[in-house]
Image (cartoon, rainbow, N blue to C red; front, side, top):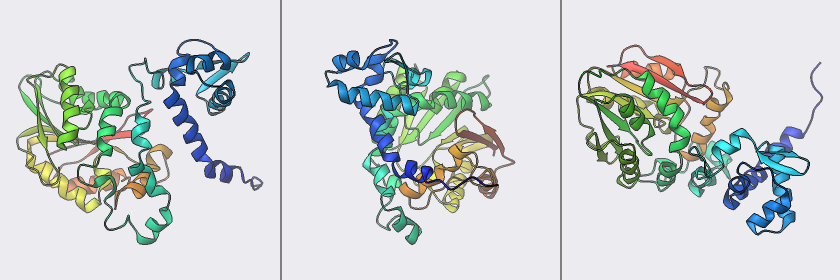
Length: 335
């Protein structure tokens, strides 16, 4: 017998913006850093924040309900995840990502999603986040590096490079540089070439210097589809890039990558890769909605679709490598 009808999911979804507003407020007030490793009352928190106690109490109670805080005997404390990602003193602090994820350029497309679906794409004049030198990518580069570090390290471990000679690695849409930096740190003979918009590359270069890659880093500024990529690369990294474009555009781009690789060189694509049913796993599959609202024709492509693109671009057999518990997977192929 099926479950009785319930409007609960309907109300939770329609009111989801309230949860976003709650977390955004907590990050802006720096509640998680104020609590830090202590167990405190709402009065103590309000004193530290210099805010009236009522709002602080309601905020913290609802953070408990959502799972961001714990509460015992009227005292609040951080969960392990909040301590890791939302306490500003943590090296994996992720709170700054709110500036990117909640920027108008990423959110405004969802307020009239029906119009996009009726048209089949964003308005013709609206390129979304694929627009040239879109300002959102500066926020992305500043905020997302720490969150990407585990996946970047797993990518570096997966990529085979000959450590007995100097090698060249091209990092497409390098952004924060986490992927390329992880590969260069894993392979001390690797020379890293980062490609992105000039404004974004200022952040990439600063992060590469901080990682001690002076002398093993250079950059190419411009559009990845039209700028001269160079040649004779041992590996090309393509993290979180192809989902912005159509399968045809992806195939044409991968053909450019094939030409830039030396014989036997490898491409490694890092993406949200849903199963063939396109609804599982949910974190990867739901990324298609992000692309619907923020790009003209982007999508979350299945492994079979990436296999087809890579084969058409001249690559050999591809292999899929999920990176749990993240929603990312890597796809590795050889030229």
